[in-house]
Image 1 (tube, rainbow, N blue to C red):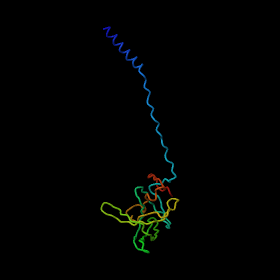
Image 2 (image 1 turned 60 degrees about the horizontal axis):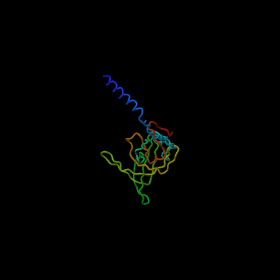
Image 3 (image 1 turned 45 degrees about the horizontal axis):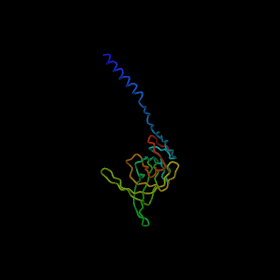
Image 4 (image 1 turned 135 degrees about the horizontal axis):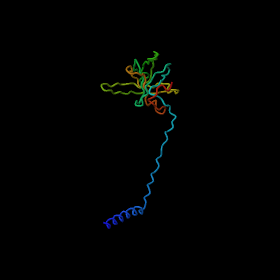
Length: 177
């Protein structure tokens, strides 16, 4: 029995001293992670709904800001295509629902787009409009002409106007007043 106890004590001593005599492993150095600062931008932060002015109209339209839309859209009535000097043009009216202000426009057609919905396809004319967006006057902004009677907002501002001008925070509205 004594022999067994001595053997066990010797084995324990061996393991304890053996562990201490083994070379110590130094921890691996983990490379530092670069924390990037947010990109500083001079872009204006705007909200989900912002006013726009269609020049020469006096009162603004409340416009839905839509980063998913490629081209902006405006509610137009009495849309009638016609030809002028061999070019395709369109006549249309825009009526501000809030103020009743009405303006008749005649613009050259710069393109068409087809909007596909579940059970219908809608062809829309694209024209260039001059607008005031915040403090900036934007000339030749592309808008498709649509019947937006069923929509709450008469105008939709898409990426063609937003890109390089604004960052959208959907928790905000009317930041450009």
